[in-house]
Length: 571
Image 1 (cartoon, rainbow, N blue to C red):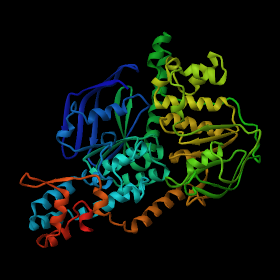
Image 2 (tube, rainbow, N blue to C red; image 1 turned 90 degrees about the vertical axis):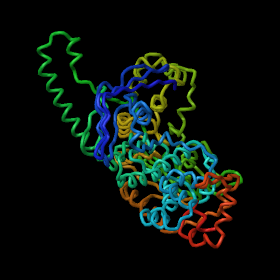
Image 3 (cartoon, one colour; image 1 turned 30 degrees about the vertical axis):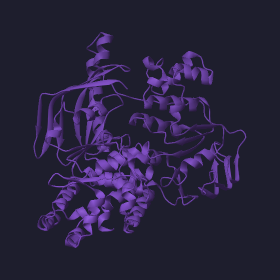
Image 4 (cartoon, rainbow, N blue to C red; image 1 turned 180 degrees about the vertical axis):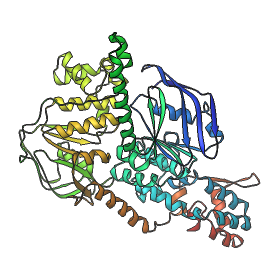
């Protein structure tokens, strides 16, 4: 998107206790969206060592603020190291482990001392940095927690794409251990297990953190303070997200009371409208409800197995059934087959073995990952609903409005819509289908918190069945979903609720971490990836020569102490 962001401020103060930016203003000039002021002469105050959640509806300037905090317009980088998730997108040809190691300043300092070759200096370094020996192991644990396998550790960064690059970038930002860490929607490319791990990891983060997230549970677990952008002002609140909600509700009631008291004194309707408290609300709605009764068997799966052609079995001997108004969540580790199961359920894939029996009168509405990208990009929002569901213009516009797309965006081409707007168009289409069952794969991606709340309300009111994959823990709690665990080629009902599942995931991570990872061979790391090492005297030598030096007897004891490129200690 062609967007020009301008930031101005009056004063910047950074000391050992706080970061203060006074008189901050933020402007956006956009070719495709309305330009204007996002933040107007407000103050941003950060207490060092605290974890903040940055919350506001979509379009209020959260991501724009992050972009300016890492730019030269606000010179924070002169006094602080700053980590930014989107800034650390990885596209290199280096091995994934090496890419992570080279992010860490302590590790880089170690490499310089190794090149210098002074044992006394190295001894002093290790006395002050005993944790350096755990760095490679910690990196592997983090990569495993967000879905990477042991086999992936041998690959180059360029071998990965899409969401995997973002996961890699998240780990890279964490390994950096900056003074100020900025994370913009870090859970968007994680599955539920990855979110549970990240929640737990960041809840122990002891440096400054500002995170943007649409997940209530994530903000409650991680954050100690909340920053809200409202009416172009930055407002700080103490406490987690639940505490913040209570505080703003008190503020809302107070403002409403003041308005009602002053309303009688103002005769002009126009003036009354100006002083009336404004709030951002979304209200998804579904007019027609399923006629399917509670005990109706909608879908029945018997002894089903599935594998892609010439591939190993993904799901084996699955027995599963959906009745009337079931609320079912499919959970499990990344790559276990959750999305494949959803595709089998809605008929996109045929089973290799067994049967899937679907009630012949059943209407299925589906929301699959990236489905919004399949919309006709050269149609307007209203044209799409009109043509797809044979609606008159006024009804199509009504549905768009119901799903939070403002009237002046109805005639925008879909290709110019945000991810959140595209998701709402798909959700509106699902409800127009008058379904008996909704099958949804990560429906909260791109939705702001108010829209997620409205989606939860809609699903609660829906009389049919719901089968869902989601990383949003709050949504699962509110719907009271029955959990089915997809793991080790099986799909079985999980004995417990979402809190029990969180404990299950964290305990499993601990168990896996207790098994020491097999060291990676030097040749595997550097195959097709020849590195050079710069010596203290300025000369540059190839890694092959550097590895041979290790074998020299006079350096034998020195290298036993080091973790040079991790694998040098294991070759």
